[in-house]
Image (cartoon, rainbow, N blue to C red; front, side, top):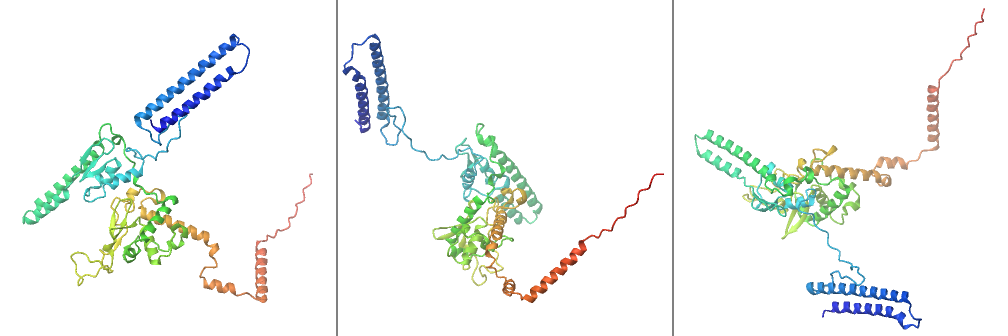
Length: 456
């Protein structure tokens, strides 16, 4: 017999003994002969005792049968003799459902499946990966999307217009007198691409089943907007990105980057020290890490290679291609100097390296409102951080008056005027005040009263 069942039975028999002793206690005492009313009360108490004993036995049979079928586990809830269930284990928070058009987390999880260039090839903007992810589609195979967890429908999105256009151009070049035919083929390819785009655009909605919720509604247009305005969001995210980049400081120090035109490196020094939490790293590493983090990149190291990651478009950039000693394929050391001033290929453009649809680069997908309308996430974050740095500088200005490097002001403050100069200054001030008082005073002429004429 399992130990748990034996323990429960012992508790049950103890309860029965307690009930029986309490019921038989009045009969052992010496009392007068019971009358009709006392005998009826004893019979009612005995009936109540029997009914209670039957309820306890029934509960015991139910609990033992459940334990014998499912097996005893210490985490299962056991019903006690008092009829109250024991405390249950707290379950882990459940994930959002498959149909959650309001959740940016699930949208980014679907968009991440399109990140592999071997599975998803570039498509026109009307049918790019963002539009498919907004309607609940996930990339499951080469140019193949599926509604996982919903209607499980699949759609193959194949647009090989670029390859066909290259073949038509090559054929046109081989033909000496076929220039007009080549132009006609290009027009046909363009019209064919537009027709395919319209067809797959309709499949984004109609590809779902009739009963699928994603067919009825998709994500809103601003689902891709990055929250870079709220201090509770951009401050910890910027802190995390900066520290991840400091872990690969050797690679970012030597990389030549091109930031935004309005980027100001002095903003980092005006921010509160506890916001970034920069330690004993070099000034070059801090400045470079702050610059790259302001453009939405974080650093990591995989298999000995330092990379930049974007958590919005899932783009990855290898930093070894932007080092001074890197030689691109097809070039030799005699005719090429890597990363010189005129070499555009050796410069890391922090904004253009994001994917075309990324909010860090694309102002349309960022969909900023108000005074920030028309700006991408990099530009918005630059304004927000600059404003925060300026406000902090103004608040801390009275405390840091003594630390300013204003040499003329410090020299004049150290020279004390003499008594004669003070007296001469006071006389000049009094004379100016006297002139100002005479200028503002209004002289009123005395008014003569006209005598009233006497009545005739």
